[in-house]
Image (cartoon, rainbow, N blue to C red; front, side, top):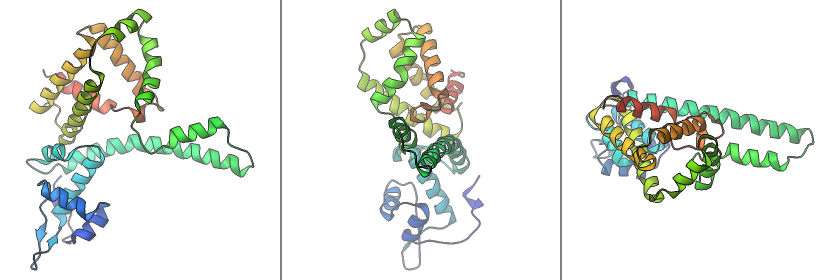
Length: 258
């Protein structure tokens, strides 16, 4: 899909373009300074944004809101138009978010119905409202522990859990490495090709990061994967996880070609 699908030959000032896209004029300048978009110039040498520039800005803003850094966005957009792939990624993310929002609406409406009947909200009602209607999806370390501790008890024996706790590795460094890998996976997903050299290189580093934890133990790896699959299938846990089935599927496809 090319930016030429935007048929209107309308041009917008920075202020109007920013308003329509829900960003600030300062953000447009930042994108320009990073070489992500190049506005046109009017006869009076004012910046202006036509259909192609608006389509480009849509891609930038969409990827930014998906959590990609400006550096990653530049890599995604390098070499051509990525609008179709960006829209595909947006659709998948929004579909998952739509399910979460629909559930949150049900909870809010049930709470309002209780109040309208003259009932009071219990502590359980209030904690459910807080947990399920929060607008942030990122789990805190404590929330991640609450999600995975029961799963670890289920999938690993007490002896295996004790052995895993004794393994020496830098948890903070591991977390940073995973954040970087996930960020890179999102960027490559937006490009749409799981069999590209970059995707296969990501899969190699992904597997190496897994081996740091499993130490090459295939059974441990299988149990860890089972834990993640169960967590991602849990409608309460899934929205807060840094990974999702689409990312796993993308990396697995890339790894299949190694």
